[in-house]
Each structure stands twice: as structure tokens, then as C-alpha cells.
Length: 294
Length: 286
Image 1: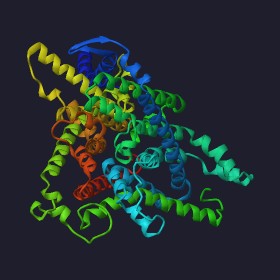
Image 2: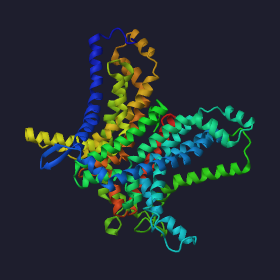
Image 3: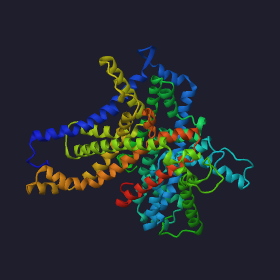
């Protein structure tokens, strides 16, 4: 419509084709077809070398082998807990950034909060390792302060894994919270206060309803990233981490049982997609903005 | 409570304490990593045994292999740089084409395509990795069976790592460039065309300069995300690991402080990049 008239119809068509080609190539060769291949793999079973038949065996194994579905449930539960904790830790900071600190202090605090997340997750995990392992900084400090007699191993606990996961996810919660709290009119809070509302009432009836889209968006992204994380649970949890992505890695790379690994991959994808779909319905387009910012 | 309302002393104190604790939580791991790069001890662990630059400059003959002599580690940094350069070039090129496609054209199935473009972000990285691995080895087997060809680039290795990372970083580049193109005032182009400029001249003198901040920004983000990627890379890596995979392997063996040295380099590099980008467009691209 706004296209200049000098453009002939066939030229436009050619341009459209040229622009469509890379997009279609990218999405079909690297996303759609690989996912289909993964689906095919997961629904077959090897009966002899180079001979396969359609089967639900891989999924049956998942449900009949307690270890597998227990790890799946554990990963999902830990991800939910981690997401909730991330929200609890991030909310006050987002509040301080948007409502308490002013001017330069506010933007400085925001920038300072973001910087650590530009650093590789590997580096941050190394930091936690040096801090928490038996020969590490915190156990030595506890001995020095007389709190424990001998250095204690702080790695390989669920709490350690959660700490690491919350740490890794904070940015993806702080950013959407800040952008949704920024649009909250201070006058509403002041009015409620003047009318005698308590802090809790203001939080429950004004702040949370207003920030709900940001909260939902942050929670979806954090949950998704936590569920799919490999590095942090693996390094901080060691053998005790029991994270579902580790099972996928083991089946695919260590045992070379691709059929089983593909089925596990699909189950993880299904869980992740279900949560994202649920969140998308609750928060609408905001999800796109969040992904853009993070 | 917000700044304009009276806040009791305990609340002010609690706020300050919370922010302080939060900042300690954020920066302690990074500071610890940086500090132990200079500790004069064979392991990155307390106690502090004095300052040394061995973990940067140390030579094998001295018994301490420093970062600048650790050819394996330096090689993996180079591998990461090569991979990240390819991923950046591909992502920005495809991202720019996608931005023009989605902002300037109408075609059947556009809505579906725009949804499909976002899906790479909701697929966990591990699954992106294994799915691309599965498809490429099927293709490799096909080529072998049908034509007797052995195509190495379809086996785990750097070409697959590049494709795996590109598969989702392209979405990020697309979103960043589209956001800028969306705010573009097209009457500028029309004015230039009315005044007799050719399409190429318009693209070169008006559209491209306007898009340049987004192109540079998305290139920087793509490079960083590729450099730091771990999940997808781990599934597709072959004989020569990029830095993150190499570091992971060494961390599992029990790290020497040379890892702290390389981490310090990464911290400085990414903080510089972050500050530069944020200074250019405060809050927008955070």
C-alpha cells in the first residue's frame, strides 16, 4: 500500500520470495523438521541393527521405571519452588527500583542488578563452587566464626541447587517486574494510604493486580529456563541433582539410546509448552516483550 | 511503601539492608572468582596465600600453567570466537531479512509464520540440540546410503554447533531489528524516492543508517549469547570444544585457578559490553 509505484508487481514478488527463503529455510531445517525427527525417533523401537518398528515402548519405559518419572516430577517441583523463590527475592528489588529509589539512584540500581547476568553461567557456577564446597570459602568462614567445628560440605544439597537456580533466573524476573511496576500510578498507592489501607491491603488489592501481567510473564520465562537448565543443577547438585535434562543427556550422548532420549525430550517439551501456553493465555502479548528484553 | 509516603525507620533500615544483602548475593560469586585468580595456591580455595600472576603468566616449566600459555584453553577461546562470529553473521543477516519480511510485506500464512518464529525461544536448549543432532545424522546416513558420501559437517562438530545456536539466536536478532524497523517513518523513504533517488540509494543512505543501532545491538547480543551458550552446544559438540564446554569439563575434574583467570577475562569483557550497550540505549535493550 505505501509501497512506491516504481515497484513493479513482479519485482515485489521477487523481493518477497527472496525475503521468505531464509526465514523458511531457518525455521524448517532447524526447528520444524528436527522436532518431527525427534517425534519419529521417540515412537520407534529397535528390534535389530538398522531395523525399527513403530512402538510406544519408550513412553512405556518412562511410566514403568520409577526413577524416570520421579526425576521428571522432581524437576518440575523444584522448578516451581525455584520460580516462586525467584519471585519473592526479585519483587522487593523491583519495588525499590521503581518506587523507592529516585532518579539516578534508581537507574543505577537497575543497571547494577543486570550486570552479573551478562556474565556466562559457567563463570557464575564456578563462583558458587568456590564459595560452597567443603574446601571453599563459606565452610572455612563458618569454622573461623566457630559456627561449625569442621568444614561442612555445602554443595550437593537441594537448597544449593535452588540457590543456584534462583541466582541464574533473577534477571528474567526483575526485568518484567520493573516494567510492570513502572506503569503503576503512585497516586493510587497514596490514595489508598490516605484512606487508611494497611500495607498488606495495598499490596493485595492494588499492587499485585496491577503487576499481574509482569508477574505471570516473569514466572513463565523463569520456569521454562529452570526446567531446561543443565549446567547449574549438574555442577551444584552433582550426583544428587537428578535433573531431567541430565537423563536426556545420558540417553543421547552416553548410552547412545536416541529413541529413549527423544521420548524424554518430548516429555520435557510437552511440560514446558503446557506451562508456556497457560501463561500466554494469562498474559497475552507481553510474553514477546519479555523475551525481547531478556 | 513508596518514596512520597512517610516510611517508619524500621522500614527504611530493612529496605537498605535488603538491597545490600541482594547486592552481596549478586556479586559475591563473581568477586570470589576474580579474587582467586590471583591466589598463590594450586587450587582456587582458601586460605589466601598471597598475590601472584602465575595463573595468567605461568609457564609449564614453572609448574603452573597460566592462561597465556594454556594452549588448550586459548584454543577453546578461539573456537568460541569463530563460532560466535558465524552465529552473529547468520543471525543478523537472517534477522534483518525477517524484519523486512514481517514489517513490509503481506502474504498468506504471515500470522502462522510470526508465531513459528517465536517457538525457538520456548524450546529448551537441550532439546534444540538433540533434535538438530538427530536430523543431521539421519541426513548423514541418507547421504552415505544413497551416494556413498561421508559428510563430516553433519556429524557433531562446529558446523552443527553454529546451526544449533543460530536456530534460536536468529529469533532474538529478528525481534530486536523488527522493533526498530516498526518505529521507522516511511515517509522519509517516499520523499527520497519522489526526489528521484534509486531504491539502492534509499536503502544505503536512509534505511540502513536508521537501522544501524539495532544491527549493532543485535550483533553484540548474538555474539554474547553464542559465546556463553552451553546447553545446545553440549549436545552438538565434537572434537574441539568451545570455551564454556571446555570450562565445564575442567570444573568437573577439579578446577585449577587458571579457570578463574579466564573467567575474570570473561567478566571484564561482558561487563564492558553490557555497560556500552546500556549507555547507548538506557533500559530499552536491557
